[in-house]
Image 1 (cartoon, rainbow, N blue to C red):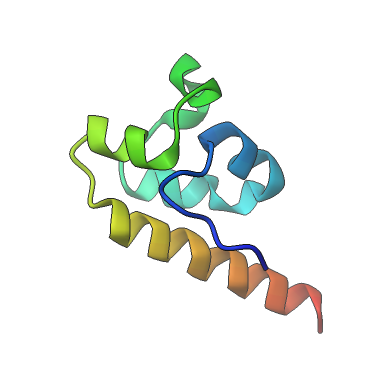
Image 2 (image 1 turned 30 degrees about the vertical axis):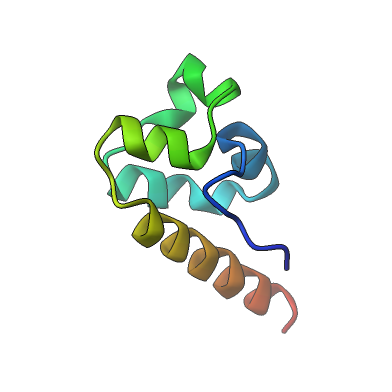
Length: 73
């Protein structure tokens, strides 16, 4: 699995891993419906909303790893 980073595009990451939409929502980020999602990175979006980017990235990567682990079973 390629790790998501603060430099990852919001829209590209969500398109590849739709399961992470819930993570964005848990952090109060409605990025998916926002035009900025088309050109902002996860780090930029988190910073704009005062979100701890490291915690957000960790939760996103944990979610992806969990889903990918289930798919391999």
